[in-house]
Length: 371
Image (cartoon, rainbow, N blue to C red; front, side, top):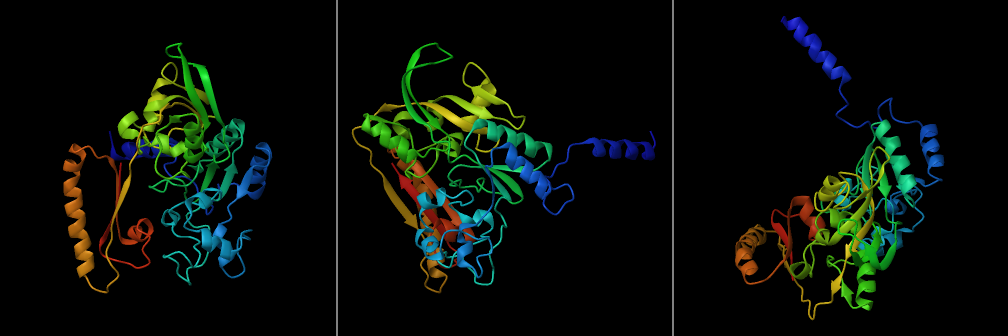
């Protein structure tokens, strides 16, 4: 076969292949304002243009944030406050620090306020049909989709440049069913049925009032959606197991617009993937059916922070690395002694975000929680 024929076949294959990259507003294929307006009409007016809440802290309030700057600055470090806004995320570094208030340690006066790493538009989802319609619309146009519940994702998956965001925060169902039929065993089970936008603090409050408990993290403002899909560890995980292990059923919507029920009896592969395979990958989960358990007699937690001082020398940075090595080396013995927990290790700009530092450093920040 000649080189010309091989190249012709290769080019033909490439021309018929699906595009590897999602489109951006800088391309002709990007939907027009009329197209976005049509989507908005099809989902009952639930499409939002992204308005960075800290826009009010910049000259002229370029995106017309309705929240005054003093309120933004006094609440900026409050994760529960951040979670109520459709675009806000707990770690702005993952939105390229696109619009920060002066109270943020990474604020730079000349940087300005832009959409940057935030989504272009946001679906304020209040029904499964709205989500299904929006997902199909975006898939047909090769638009990037991200999913945000409360914005706590530690890998920044709650936001994304040039994307359409599905905001599940208002899927707030919270009910106890004492005789829910398990479709796999046909047995009757006592469960909680919870919307994926609900927050663990509310679920745990209800459970504790009933003498019950569920596996949650230590931050009550975290939502169910990404937490469960990432596995879900927390203070009672060493007693009862990861949060994903207690999910009996999910409702999930795919980019084809299918509204599926996933459990051990149907859509088993999807059910397996969604229980720890990572959030924002397989579809939009709208509802969980989860087991609950008796309250343990005692739950004890402790925190450890390793961070360099701002002393203008390298000594503190070097000491932070030595301390981190000593701590991480001790973890196997601590686990053998019965401790469990979670740690984050951060350097560079990420260290400023995770360690709440107001200075740059060549050292390392370790935040460790034990239970």
